[in-house]
Length: 100
Image (tube, rainbow, N blue to C red; front, side, top):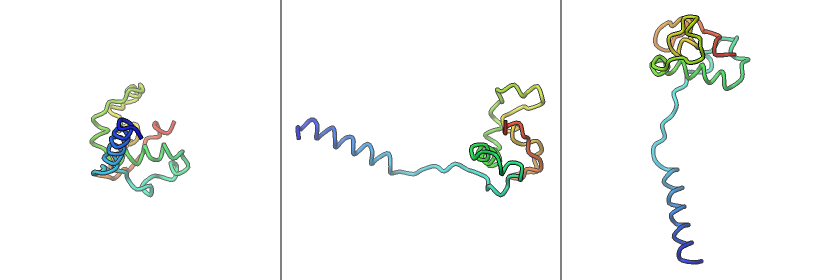
């Protein structure tokens, strides 16, 4: 093997090894059991979006909604998922806007 190819291979392996090690940040998700029955038949991606919204309220409150639903009273992305908030991690009514 040529010296240049060998060095390139070693650098590539070092890059792969360094990207695989180190701390990984986990995404906060609410338990699937927190979803209402009406969402349990929704596609997995929709269920995960609702679970993420429930677990990351502060983040979604900081993100404005750009789909035009502010005309129905939505002030943030969180409003597309939650119609009535019952406190930290507690949703008393879900908004079905994000299902469609």
